[in-house]
Amino acid sequence: MTDPRTALVAAGYDAMIDTWETWKAQITDDPRADWCDELVARLPRGGRVVELGCGGGTDETRLLAERFRLTAIDLSAEQLRRARERVPERRSSTGTSRSSSSTRPRSTRWRRSTS
Image 1 (cartoon, rainbow, N blue to C red):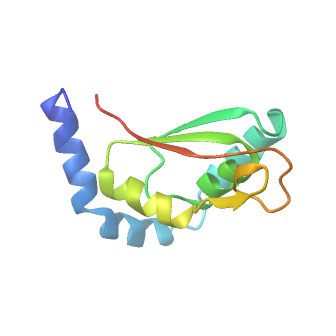
Image 2: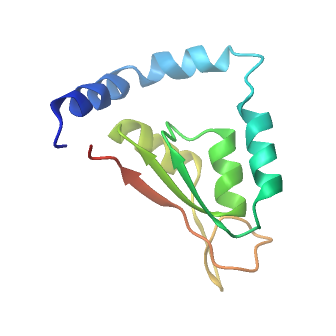
Image 3: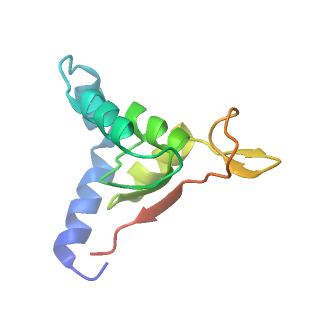
C-alpha cells in the first residue's frame, strides 16, 4: 500500500473483523438489502458490478455475485479472505459460475485496494 493511512485502516479492519461481524449481526433494520434489491432491479442480469468495501462477504455480496460479474474490493486482506470463503465459486461446463441456474460464465474478482 502506498499510503500509510490506508495500511493503518486495513490493519484495523483485519484486527477487528470478529467484533465487526458480531455487531453487524445484531442490526435489525439494515437498509442494505433493500438498496441491493433496488440495484438488482435496475441492472441487466450478467452486467458488471463493483462493490467497494465488500467486507467479509455479506448476503448482498452473494446476491451480486450470483447475478452479475462482480468485482469486490476491500482494503482488508482478512475481510477479503472471509468473503472468498462465503461466496465460493462453482465450476460449470460454461465456465466459472456462481449459480447453478446460470447460462453465462460468471466469476467474481476479489481485489485488495492499494490506496
